[in-house]
Structures are given as C-alpha cells and as structure tokens.
Amino acid sequence: MAGNNTAYNTNAPKSVGPWRSTNKLVKIMNDSFYDLPCPVNLNAWWSFGSMLGLCLVIQLLSGLLLSAHYTAHEDMAFDSVVHIMRNVEKGWMLRNIHANGSSMFFICIYAHIARGLYYGSYLDKTVWYFGVHLFLLTMAEAFLGYTLPWGQMSYWGATVITNMLSVIPVVGESMLRYVWGGWTVCNATLKRFYTLHFLLPFVMVAVVFLHLFFLHEKGSNNPLGIESGTMCVPFHPFYTIKDLFGYVCFSFFFMYLVCVDPELLGNHLNYWPANPMKTPIHVQPEWYFMFAYAILRSIPHKAGGVYVMFLSIVVLYLIPTLHTGKYRSLCFYPLNQVVFWVLVGSFISLTWIGARPVREPYIILGQCLSVIYFSSLLLNPLSLWVWDKLLEYPKFCVSRPVDLKWFKFLAYFKLLKLVNRENSAREWANKCSKM
Image (cartoon, rainbow, N blue to C red; front, side, top):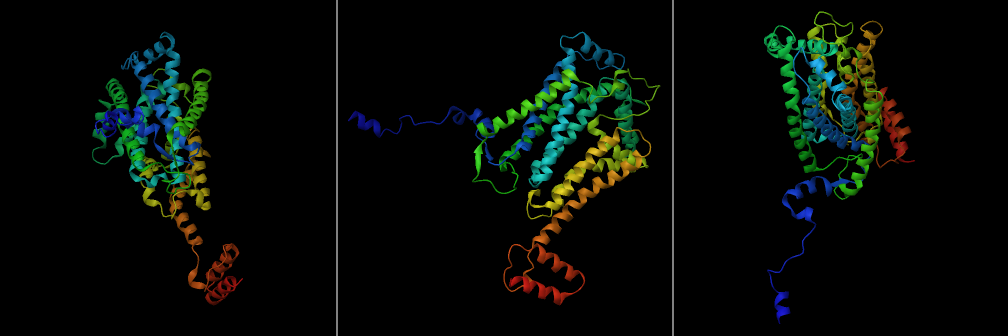
C-alpha cells in the first residue's frame, strides 16, 4: 500500500532536464549558444561573426593591459609606447597584438558585411541596423586608437580627419575647436581621444548584445534565404566545430602578423615622433579606411568630398530599403552576383588607390572607381527587378503553360516586342506553347 501511495504522490520529485536547461542564469546562455537552433546549411562565411566576437575580446584584454603602461600626454605618449615595446615583459607582443588586432577586426567585419549583402541578411532590418551601428563605432574606435601613439602619421591623420568637422554648416568650426580643446591638435585632444578610446568599447559590447538578441529572436539567415524552421540543428556541436576551425585559421594569420611581420599592414612613418612643424608628403589613414580616403580625395571640392565619403559608409543603412527582389539570396540572381563582385572589386581597388600618391593616373582611377562603387550599389535593386521580370512567364500571350526550357523563346519574344512586332510576338509565343 505504501508503494501504491507513493505512485500517486504529487509531491514526488519529477525528472528534470540537463542542468544548463534548468538553471535560470545558465539557461539564457544555453539558449543563445549551446542549444541555439541554427539552419543546417550555414557555410564558412557565417564563421566571421564569431571571429568578430573573438577580435573584440582580444582587443579589450590587450587594450586594458596596455593602458596600465601608456601615458596620455603629448610629451610622453610616444616614449611610453617605446617603453612598452622595449622594457615591459612581452610588451612588444602585447602592442603588436593590439595593433594588428584592429586589422584582423576589419578583415572580419568587411567579410561579415559582404556575406550579409550577398545572402540578403540585411532584410532582418533591426539586426542589420545594429550591425551598421557597430561598424561605425568600430571605425570611430580605430581612428581614436590610431592617434594614441602620437607618431608623425598619428598626429597628422588626426589633424586631417578632425578638420572634416569644419564642413558642417554653422556649427562646424565651433565643434572643431571643442574637439581639439584649442586652436590645433594638442595635449587636450590626446587626452580626450584616449578617454573616448577607453570608454567606447563598453558601448560596443552593449550594442553587440543587442545585435545578438535580435538575431537570436528571429534566427539566422541561410545561404538560400528561405525559412529554415524545420531544417535546424543545435549550435553545439555542429557549428562550434566549424567556429573552432575558423579560430585556428584566424590564429595562424594573426600570429604571422604579430610575430613575423608586424608592420605588414602598418605605416613606418608612425615610428617618428609627432612634429607639428613638418607635414608628411603623403598623409594617409590605416589601410581599412583607404577606400573612404580614396573617395574623399577623388572629389576636388572639400565639403563635397567629405559628404560623398560619409555617404559611401552610411549607404549601408539604405540597403534594406533598396531590395526589390522576390528572393533574399543572390544565389537566385546571376546578374546581381556580377554586380556584387564588381562592388567588391571596386572596394579593393579603392583601398589600393588610397595608398598611392595623389597624382595621375591614380586621381582619374580613383574617380572612375568611385563612380563604379556607387553605381554598383544603385544597380543592385534595378538588376534584381530586371531578373525577376525576366523570370516572369508572359501568361497573357499564351493559352497554356510553356515548357521550362524557355530561354530561346524569351529572347525571340523580347526581341519582337522591342521592334514593335506585337502580332509576331504573340504568334511566336503560341507556337512555342504548342511545341
């Protein structure tokens, strides 16, 4: 009887799931990473998102350690960097990790943006907008960090870029003086940039969490751009293995930059202390800003160049509204694949042009590539619409469905319509429908 009473006891302990699913705090992390449902067909391009998380952690930790030895003063900043490189235990490695970590950050972020453009991830508008916010914050953070060594290129790069504020109508000059803290880039500027460089990463971490929150709320896109609710697998172990492999590949290239060729992506002029009395022949930013710098110098007018350069970046906010296709992914749009790779080619070419001297033929090449860059962005919605129209079957011209092998038929049909041969076009369509 006692055994029977136990069988019907409602207070008897119930079977519970894994600890990670029952602990309230751990469950949040578990649902966001470990057991997160992911589309089964994600490819290697999706690994760049997790690599960006790795980059952010590396930059936060290395920057925090470097800040213990850095001195934000115009007379001591350059010497404090030299002290880190020469006297601090493994300081050379720490500084190379932080300096080249920014380059790796931008390599991953550009690949991440390109994947979003190709596979239509921008149609999740909230996720995309937070991603663009993060991109702009990363650019601001990289610029602020570039000025801190207070080398020759750091000083003059800060002078050139902050001068862009002067093109803002009415308040531009006042804003410029406020940012400088004086009549030119000086010690007050360096202190302000260092403070912002230290605080901005914490804002970035908050935006990252919002980016991931909205991403996991709806789920990841996939290469086909279709609903994948019934074709999902847990994040672990399927994608943790892929991401770990991505981390290994990332680490090989990163350690090559840190230990073998740390100045591959740097500028040798930054090993000279800042000299306000001597302007370098070619003032140029880091490589990841070169595409925007090339667009800036392609416009002869100062204000016009700044506006167009700014537009080349914030145009990412307009991408979701410019989508006119019926499908998300460019897998279904061969014309747009060509346009996409033209965009990528123009971006890489502009980066190269930005590192060249300001003389012919680089000036005209930069102007042509700037036109190609913006044209490819504007042609994308048009080519989406054209391809969808080409795929639409001209049902108004035939009495019954035509075979799927319609390319020859479509070419003749459009040609006859083009030369105003309406009757011939209808006759050709009916003839093909009876074949």
